[in-house]
Amino acid sequence: MKKQTLRDRIIEAAYACTYESGISKLTLEDVAKQAGTSRATIYRYFPKGRDQLVSEVVAWAAFIWLEGLVEAISGIDDFEEIGVKAIMFAHKSLLNHDLLQKVLDEEPQVILPLLTVEASRIVAFVHLYVVTRLFGKTLPEHIDRDTFAEYMARLLVSTIVTPGRWDLSDERQVRDLVRCEFMAPLTTGR
Image (tube, helix red, strand yellow):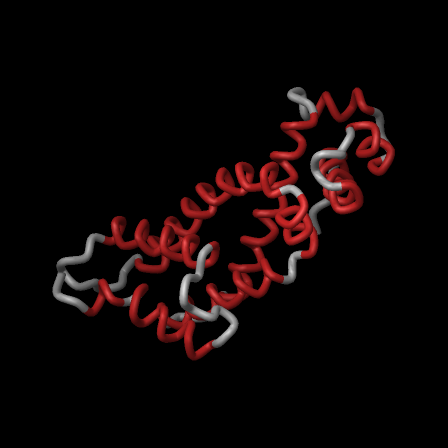
């Protein structure tokens, strides 16, 4: 198990304080008290202050979410099944994320720009994951591996954020979605 650093403790304290008071009311004094450290120490780790700390908390939470996503699809070899499990995990975990839902409800103007930055990082991670999973697999000749991975990554993030007509809690609908929209490039001639 990885030993928790003071930086980790500060991020976790900021996360807890955000849950208690929201992003707009988050103060470095409260974080320092929660982390059992000083405000000066927080500036040592986060020289740009509160804004940097908030961004790092969002990045930390996104990384934890990605770890959960990878765990949810580990051991699955079928690409379509990976898509189904990934979408269902993502949908459920975001709906059940108390802090995210609270902040989206109370302070969307603050969190949405931060989530946009993390969405770009998540797209890059999923892109890399798809390329890695496709390594050694034969694709139709009209499919460029990198282009397909980018398509899959962007479609996944877009679907999770705005599912449109799909009920992402209904496995049958998610399977139809994956077949119709995600896997279509692999089965069509263009």
